[in-house]
Length: 390
Image 1 (cartoon, helix red, strand yellow):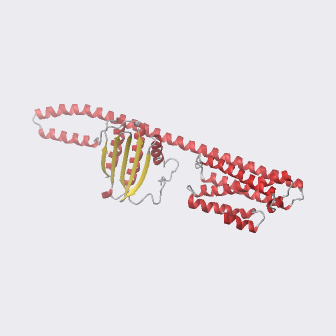
Image 2 (cartoon, rainbow, N blue to C red; image 1 turned 45 degrees about the vertical axis):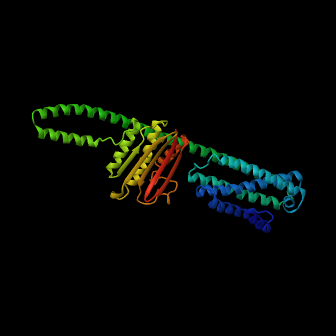
Image 3 (spheres, rainbow, N blue to C red; image 1 turned 120 degrees about the vertical axis):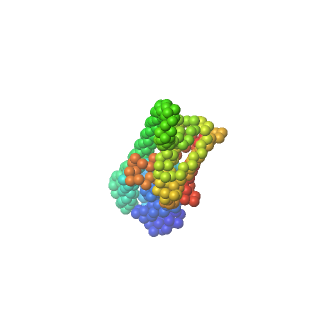
């Protein structure tokens, strides 16, 4: 950056449009060292440059009015006024950047590409306007009234940028809130679904018990009458019916039982080999949160495993509870590496609005319990490890 400033200042008294090179530098820097999307990095580069030129132009113009020195003198002469201008400019610049960074800590990331582009275009236009107005001010020092109006115009542009900045923050906050509400809505949808599953399984168990009583009466009558063939046929038919409603696991929690049994049975229906190891002492975690967590993990695992070759479909679920920790690990086969091309695990479905909340919900629940999420791959297997604090 220092080298760039020295080169540009040796070419021109006032950077003007050469200041675009600063944005290029900031953009290249952000590509190498900052996180975020390309649009976010472009936004950062342009905003930083607009802040630089805005503060510089504002302070120099104000000092020119106060000291009665023309702009050329402040730029070129090694005077006390120039030193004072530089000190004030750097102080204001530092303060403005600190404020902006504080705002960025609120995560201004929830904007659509069109919104990013519109906001960026405002800053680009502002940069060009700053350059055009200030260049005119430097070149017409003898027209004092024109200079005053140009300086007023410069400060108006500064105000426009401030307003634009707060619009950016507010729009981002609204987008963030929309995403949070949609995430909660999805979680409530899961909870309602799991409640319905529990109710359905309960009714199914009651119906099964009632039917079994009737079958035992019939079976007893058949055996008494020595109709062994008919009795055997009745036993076979009932065994098949019971197998279809097989309970895979029982952890002592109706909600968790429901989601595990339904999801693992669904996995089996796709020919996926299922292994499940669950600790029965699951306490300290909300049943609805557990259902959302397990449901989303298994939905993702089933979706990936069923894309594998039929003889290579597997899911392994491990849940353990010890001390203050609750841990869940889901391992599933994958047809090809995922993280290399999709590190953030974004949805690959066309409807981005109503999909892609599985991983977000998992992370949301983990954060709620001050926990951690870890996703990695080894030997054609995708591993999701979640740790929650009770």
